[in-house]
Length: 109
Image 1: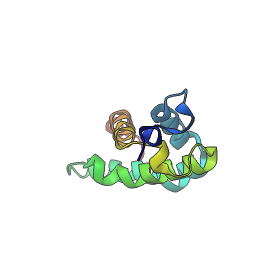
Image 2: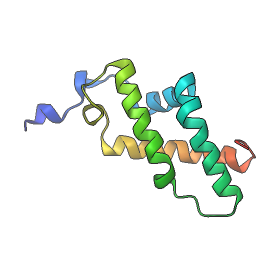
Image 3: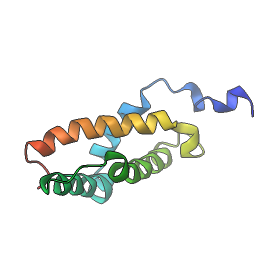
Image 4: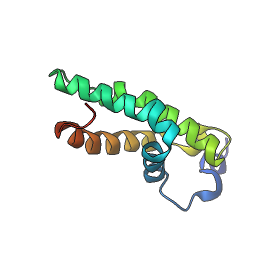
């Protein structure tokens, strides 16, 4: 494998993490099918007093987002070309920190 194969396609000139989070929250079909149900589940777990395992509960939604994002915007042949593990973790951390704040305020009930 060559180093050039490890680089992202077209040397993206935008923040793919931020753009994917915006996609997850603003694409109506993705939001209804994946995002809102995942946040509702987190809210239920939080309100029951249980510990919230962000990785366990958010990563399936993030993987779905990466797949749909790549298909919709045709930025790579597959998600592994477009998203690194660090990108996925950054998406998870951003969503978790922002949404847990909202969940604590009573959202997603």
